[in-house]
Image (cartoon, rainbow, N blue to C red):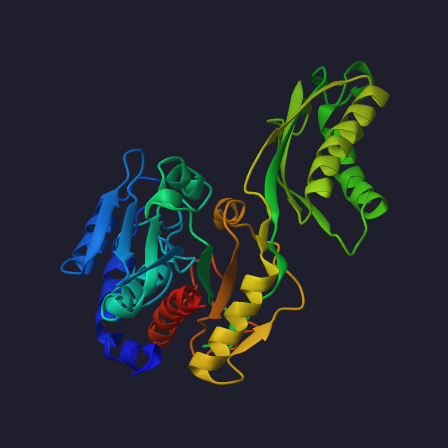
Length: 396
């Protein structure tokens, strides 16, 4: 029986686990109830299990029946600070917390893969590391798990690592997509404080207006991007926060704004940081103001190994038949901390369409929306692909 067929037998169990996780989402690095549910789902399997010390992670190692290398499979577990707006029987019971990015599905699928591979342990020519990770949503959970030794959990560094991510829109349900090379962007935060001299709104010439200069900076940053960077190696700078002043007739002493900065190459990531600072400093100097500019480094570029991305495509075709996998023509501007794993181990990150069949993937609410809905029907297929990737890679 194929993993695809076996996974269908686990469908009800996977749905129950996913719904249980969805009703009680947890944020950040510390997910005690989620960790407890994962441990319960793995109970009785022939796994070597270790939990994290600085975060509520679960690392489980399945030793194959024959000697060989190790392969890592990763599923993230944390939710988002979003209040759910769906009418579902398993809606989040915690206001301000929601599995709006589908990590509850990832966790259930990875637990399913552990069951599938445990059932064929004697056939495995090597070991499988199951990486149940907290803190993907901006908390660098993968980096913390690497620091705590997840990549060496089997005794030797994995020869390959695979991650998966469901999407509530963009892809038809059940369709897998990936690509060689960059698949998700690096994401950094640019923080700017413009310092002027406050005064009366009726007499701007007696003040140094930080709001006007800040607005000029925001516009100039967009122009800089289009005139500095090749459109075929894209850079995106979006100012999502701008604060200054407290009354219509008062010029404040300072204004502040923050921008997300997305890049797909290491060279552009370095260059855009330098150019952003040069632009804001130049405008501040032209207006006689001071400016403070800094960066908060986010996740690196998520880069798929070319050979491993091709292996994912071939494996999906063999498991599900043609037409269930396609090579994405372009990467996604979102970011992922699986990038830390792929900086250390060759591997691939793959998307899985989980848009409900009664919705249009082109218009359905996307991940992170309070109205995002993910179809349970994809759970067995996600678990099966996880399992098949590990099994086939160890058999290669």
